[in-house]
Image 1 (tube, rainbow, N blue to C red):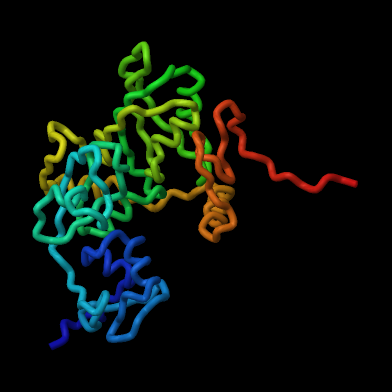
Image 2: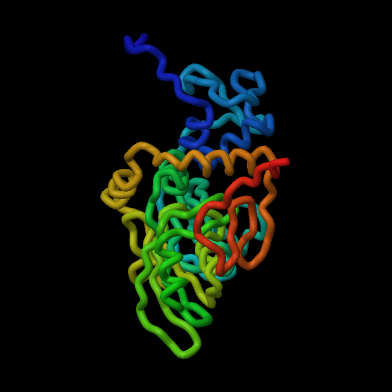
Length: 296
């Protein structure tokens, strides 16, 4: 008997994320790779809407069904990887004996430590990890080298990386030492290796990076390798933290990222993360001007 309601359709990638297959971006990659089929037909284009109550949706030939949602907070030790592939003994997911398949929200590089969220809630993971929702990330950083006022100012204004100019960072000096300093650094984008790259752009090197807060969660007293389940109230606060509309990016930054995606601008490696909009220490913070033809 019909319930009197029209079938509820949703985007395919959103359903896959909700079913625990990964973040929305990871699910889009599954679709683009031709691994997803709806009622026996392979789907590779984005934007297809499905009603999981009446459609049979498969990934690699196996039917996808929604799972109960799970949320964990983990203190990632150094050396563990925030990925789903590789040696299982060093994957951060191996630290949690979950009854469902979970994945990390964003990434902490292998040499970084601290707070990472594991979940199978793809929609929440997308909002927490995506730079446009500006979820705050707080790191305690042990620096090597002299922390100058000029470097502080540049970080607080934002620095240029290959993707464009970062949002201004909040920085609190905890203590200064003869060979460096300990600071708390707050960022709101979560770009790849953003903390190390920002510090390198102003001539600083991080000896140790520990994430101590993410959105409205704190690491607390969890020791390295320990975990705990999030309470319903904590999950609600996380949703509230990223409930607004995505933050618009400057036009020049959107153009720059679009060129990177199309392969027309290739980021280079180097201390200041050279790239189409990158700057090396000591250069002006103004965006580079496009060179025109010399008048004849």
